[in-house]
Image 1: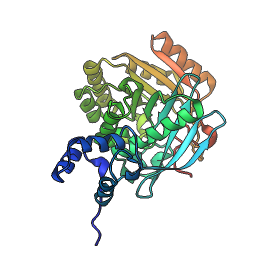
Image 2 (image 1 turned 90 degrees about the horizontal axis):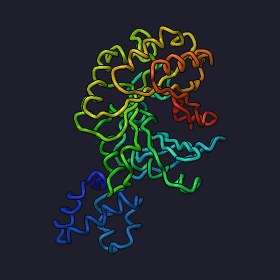
Image 3 (image 1 turned 90 degrees about the vertical axis):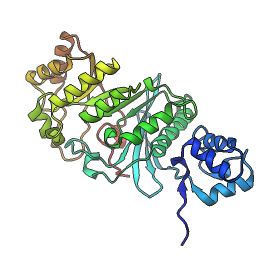
Image 4 (image 1 turned 135 degrees about the vertical axis):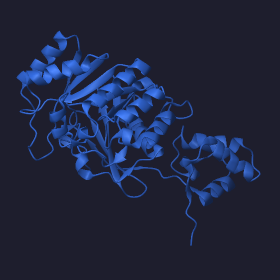
Length: 346
């Protein structure tokens, strides 16, 4: 029976150096291979051209590079690009490139399916199949960076963890991926250009604060009234708003980093003055910003975008209370690439 080869990107740089030293080679050989794997995103050992044929064969015998494949790329009429990304075990996730005149943002996935059960989101209907490894998250960013350079003539400027999955339910792998993305030995991106969006897992928000992370935090809130939030996001029964709020207060006390709330207004669900008042109250304990997001239907018509009057009411009351608010128009709707629509229809 053939011995299963190890995923080489699961090794640290020191482990790679040790591998070569154990074979009587120089430790710097490990540095060379590490650079090919991360900075140069090599898909194969064959591509490592400054390494001898024998060494490449040796790597081939012991290891595998579980690289992602962009199976299908769709382009929206507004320039948004959606990738169906095939993983080494045949499972598929989706990632999105969102261009504006000044920046390109990568929206990346952290799980195949999702651990949570938000009723308005297509991804939650897939159920979680597995967590993505750090290299699979990293590869999505590399693929979008090269598409950005090819189609928009500029490198990727921002990353949001708002694709498929709840990033905080894959905490260690997501943080390892961010470490690689921001490291000078990886993509060298500034952590300030990365936003992690969570539905709100209090324990993990506190853990991030304790680890003094430098990236930004966004919370998918959608209601500041427990009964309503639980009706649309059932896991809120386990992580109620008081626990979330306490964790966010802790986050701000540790990081001094402003919190963004992602918020969709639906007709007949959270479109009254009472809903806005609860949101204002929730926002007041720490500097925050509210992104009001256009709703993107997911087929069954149970949720309907609120009227423009309801949106205007939210904007006017939030602004009156000194809370920064933006209304975000969705991008990539025609290819099911907008917020909440990622469901592997491809």
